[in-house]
Image (tube, rainbow, N blue to C red; front, top):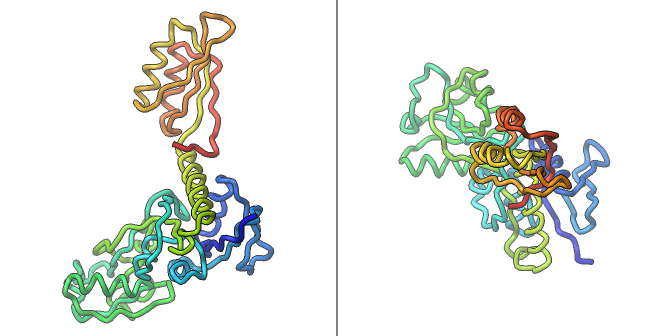
Length: 295
């Protein structure tokens, strides 16, 4: 038995989607109460701790945590020196990356970063925003905001810097996106000392493999079918046309004139592909979900 790997789990909007991803990868977390910051895990080598994603890079860098899941945006904002183990493209609502954007009220005269000279900006990304302003030679007052930045413009500040996944909250508050400061996805990051410890490094590499496999599996499904050998070429062509990288596994059946085919395809192509396979002579077609796909 090894020791414990202290793992930071993002509390808040990413919490449930993170727990769901880990469950598909093979780990189950349970909350003892709604207010607990210490979930339990069915892996005795893991010691999970719920923290705001803004704080995780700092605690990982300091060695208080061995590793954690957080956004690339928060790693950049903290300027944390950590090891990036892998990128995990998931979020609270979609698989799209988030954007950290400069936004201003519709109808305002702020149309570029240059228009912020001498203005006031509210944001959780103070350091990231200050570096972006400095890069463009703009001097502005940047104040920290505990979230809900959208309600502060234009009454309290001239502009805000926030993260957005769909832009719906900005539109609802009559705000326009002026510039994109950075694009961010979730990252599994590790403390450098922990990464230098063999069992912790192997544990994190295995974790990355399984988490990535769970994410890959979200986009694909398995298809099984039977086909006569005379229809085999046409069916293989249809599968390759749907995704040129896919080649089915072909197995002989007891009837020598028939074979069984099995293939993994992107879920989005099945709607069009399956009827074509049926018309081409495939029989006994069934689709099944996948839990992990490791390439």
